[in-house]
Every structure is written in structure tokens, then in C-alpha cells.
Figure (spheres, rainbow, N blue to C red):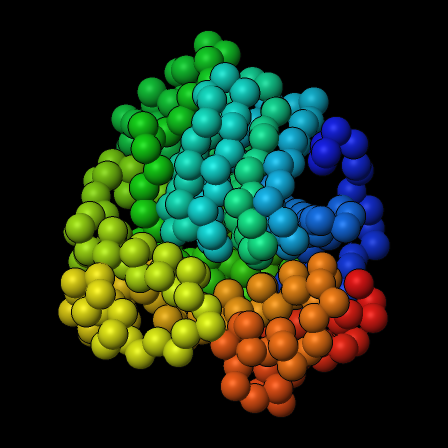
Length: 322
């Protein structure tokens, strides 16, 4: 697999940067790519005849990353953290929003991923065993159509537009990412979880309706709340204020936010603040006190404590290593 960034090719290395070690899953086959603007962690795990890819991208500025391989591209693609605009050979531009999924095939593995700024992007990709897909096709006509196009060598997506990850899928994904493959006895359980996720993906593809109890208007409001937080990380929001601004019930906003994005409103705000802090530490000569203020912390000690909890090092130590 070849990664191209700023017209320079990179290969994955077994050396994992400190900033990425907290994402490592026990028993995974991990490799990384590192440069000044981008750090990538790819973890591969077997699941019977299928393969699971858990990928983390730490981005310091707006960037594009091209990924190529000699094999065809066949993945169930789930955006776990932040929206992922991507361009896939034969399919063109595609936007998979945070909390959405699709099953994608292209005979040519050539992707151009777009990163719109300083973010931690997290995706889950599953290359399902063809024998398993063919076995399940009779029960899901949408999958039968997908496989027919695949066999004809046509780039195709299971869904005309990505669908939302449901609460049931989130539960499976959580368990899947917390199984230690260092213990060989867990391998069958891991494979079962991967196959269970496929069932939910196909079932949701058949339904093609918004996740859980939220309609499209409510999902738009929850997305607006997320965008408000991203654009105003220095501001100390209260949930009631956000709910009023997006025109949504406070209770529904709290629960819907966690269901779509996997974090509560305040957890999400803390993550956004830490990502901006990391960029400022990397790219500016601002003092730690000033960075604390710019990211919404009234106390330097509170900022240092939050940063160390997120990244495992103090802001000062992080700057020394950058």
C-alpha cells in the first residue's frame, strides 16, 4: 500500500509515534506513517476470511492523502470520528459523514482522502470475505445487486447515499474494538462480532431510514449543534443554550448527540479543544498560558491536566517532542 502526500510517496512503518500509541488495539497488526503535517495509524486484524482495518489520522492542517494498492478496493466503510470527503476511482467524490457507513467496491484501489483541518479522524473499514457475502446475498437483494456489479468489474456502492450507524451497530463496534486478540480464544468471538456488524449494515441498508428514533430534521439539528461547538471552542456552552439555538429539545439533543457521535456534548468539546491545542503547540510560539486561553480554559492547570489525560504527556513535553 502506497500513501502519497504533497506529491511524495510514503510506506507504512512498524515504528508507532507516541501520539498514536493510545489508539493501539491489543493483538492488532499495527503500522504507521509520519510526517510534519500528518500521522496515520493503520491496524489490521483477521476475522475468519475477512479483514478489519481500524485507522486513525492526526492532521495538523488542511491536507489531501492519496492511497493506492495493487488489489481491488472492497470495504465496508464507517466514519467513526469526523466527516470524510473522499474520491474513489470509478465512483468520484463521496462524503461519508461522521456516524455514517457504506459498502464500496472499485476494481482499482485508488483513493484521495480530504482532511479539512486540524482533526483526529477515525474510520473502521472491513474487507468482508467474498464467500460470506455470496452466502448472505439471497437474504438481502440489495447485496445481490452489489455483487452482480462487482463481478462485472463495475465500481459500485451498496447505497446511493451513506446511511446512519444505528445504536445496535455502535454497541457491536464498541465490543469489537475492546476484544484483545492477544488472547487467541477471543478470535472466534471477534469474527462473530464482525459478521454481526455485517448483518446490521445490510439490515439498515434495506430499511434506509435514519438511525434510532431521530428523523432527518432532528439529525440536521444535532449536526448543527456539533458545528456550533467546533466553531466556538473557547465558549463555555450550556446544553440548554445549544438546544435553543438549534431548535431542539434538550433531552433529545443530549441523547441524540451521544448516539450519532459516540460522545457527549462536553466530551466532544474537550476533544475539539485538545486537537486545536495540539496544532498550536506544533505550529506556533504561543505560550502554554495563551494556548490554554485560546482553547477555552480559564486555568492553565486545568488545561495541562486535560491535555495530559488526552495525550499522555504535558503540553510542555509534547512541544519538546514535536
